[in-house]
Image 1 (spheres, rainbow, N blue to C red):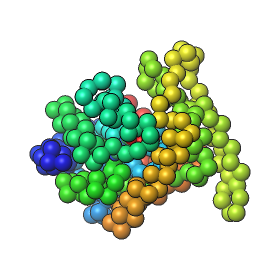
Image 2 (image 1 turned 180 degrees about the vertical axis):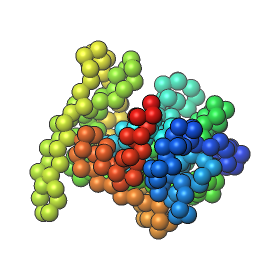
Image 3 (image 1 turned 30 degrees about the horizontal axis):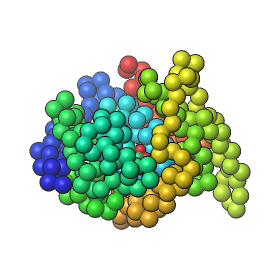
Image 4 (image 1 turned 135 degrees about the horizontal axis):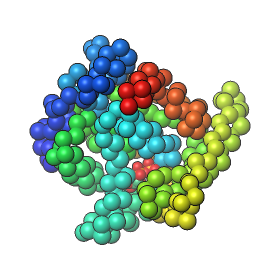
Length: 284
Ligand code: ADP
């Protein structure tokens, strides 16, 4: 714990470092204000002198990684997924590896100490590369983690992605990653009918290109039993974070309307970044 606190206090990642925008982005941003980026004085606004510091919350399978990663590319901030840090540690066969694999493969949470240590190391390495700002995905996941984060830095915005519970298991079971290029795909066809006033939801599979097809792998913890355990643990342990950030006025709820083609533009709109994306592509 001390490590995150120490690293964070001295880190530009936590708000005291480089300016976020390049000259061209700054110019385009000036006429394209998003309340989440800077200015205005609201608590979730990123101050002018640093990059955004956002958190993505949401159940396993909701798509945190997909949207956090797209936004990180758009905004030029690192996307830091603690699940990825855990999987890297697992793959490294280091001293923690055996212990972690037992925990992860049962769908349980890694201890706050271990996860804070992995995140600290990632932040430290990023700081050395001159990174500023972040979009956190999968952290915090416990109240203790949220308190530690809150003690060391200001979070501007917490995006809570939501999908009906019925589709989450299918989405997790449909996840595939290309073992060569590392890109994520999803082979699930989601077609949930609307009922009791809830709109239906359909999501086309996100299929890999031909060259990735034979190299697809499935995460060891994406089995039906483990996904159900993860969903249960999310509801018990991580859901209270929604209320915690709602009370602080940081929470933005976002009901995903469908797959990426429907959801991405709507998310940008909700973040008032739709215009920003257009101007970025013109500037590119
Ligand atoms: P999910 O699809 O469940 O959101 P992740 O890729 O975020 O999966 O995480 C995979 C696993 O890594 C989790 O089930 C958990 O064991 C561990 N993990 C990731 N982030 C955290 C965290 N902040 N606290 C504790 N454990 C974590």
